Amino acid sequence: MNISKVFIAGDHAAYDLKNKCKEILANLGFEVIDLGTDSPDISVDYPDFAYELSKKVLETKDSYGVLICGTGIGISIAANRNAGIRCALCHDSFTAKMAREHNDANVLCFGSRVVGIGVVEDMCKVFFNTEFACGRHERRVKKLNSCLN
Ligand code: RB5
Image 1 (cartoon, rainbow, N blue to C red):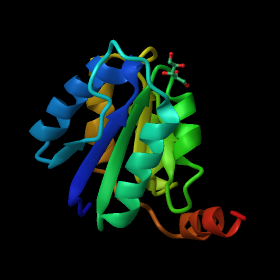
Image 2: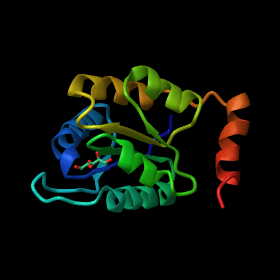
Image 3: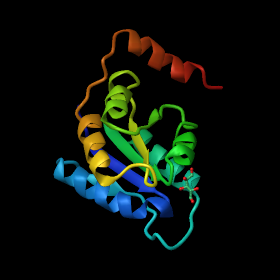
């Protein structure tokens, strides 16, 4: 994969795991840009962070994203409302691999109250090292955009 930057963002529930995930990504050699939130103590709204990260991923060539909230559900729903964002809520290295191989996901998402740091490390390694398989999957991924109104 050709990766220029990895943007990362999450809400207050994600703060601690986001910091750990930043370290993992930096150790994998990526330029990591943290778009917040910056405190676990101030309650914030996950759509704000999903929209900000989606904008950055869409406007920055070859960039990818990581989004985290308590479950991963809210923030992935919000991100996927942006045409061109394919945000995959993953739970393990298998789903992270499939998200890239079959769905050409450009944003990896998980829940801080769902997965631990070991699983996050596995998911990051596999997600950012798996190419899109193209072939029949290309046709399907193209339909994701054409279905938007
Ligand atoms: C915040 O308490 C929580 O609702 C949020 O992080 C997320 O899990 C929503 O989907």
